Amino acid sequence: MRIVVLVSGAGSNLQAVIDSVSSGALQVEIAAVGADRPGTGGVQRSADAGIDTFVVNFADYPNRADWNTALTQAVAFYQPDYVVSSGFMRIVGEEFLDSFPNRYLNTHPALLPSFPGAHGVRDALAYGVKVTGCTVMIADAGVDTGPILAQQAVEVLDDDTEDSLHERIKVLERRLLIETLASLAERADHATR
Ligand code: GRF
Image (cartoon, rainbow, N blue to C red; front, top):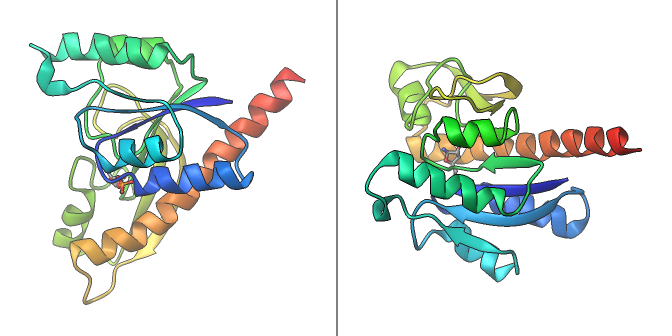
């Protein structure tokens, strides 16, 4: 199973995927890692690991549609079975979703449908929930609205800050993403036998 991973940030979740692939625990091929802006830690980590990288810089395009077309082409070049958003902080358009139907995975640091959007951890903390968590889903055209594949709960502690809570969530988010990819890879393997 070939995957392309999209990142916008530090890429610590991506690093966990890279490590699982290198150790043989996760049987997928990371065909490439792409970002929506230059200088991300995620692209740097991938280049260090010898993985192909690309940047489709949102700021370089006159409008979202043109950027979306360029992103779709850059990803399609690698012919992935799945595209994984690992902290990719952009909504992709129809052209992208139609090119990878039901094959665009996303993770979110909250228990959807609660607290969608860019500040899932902050919003959960501000609301005062006692339990939050993480979600792996198939992304669709909405903001964190696609079908849910897996979820894990995380307790909110009295002295949690956004950072401390996010770090604990990310430990489980990584595990959940890797487990989900492993089960999709196993299914793909069975289907080709
Ligand atoms: C994850 O919690 C992701 O769900 C959120 O940002 C975090 C990604 O962090 N949108 P990193 O780039 O993998 O370190």
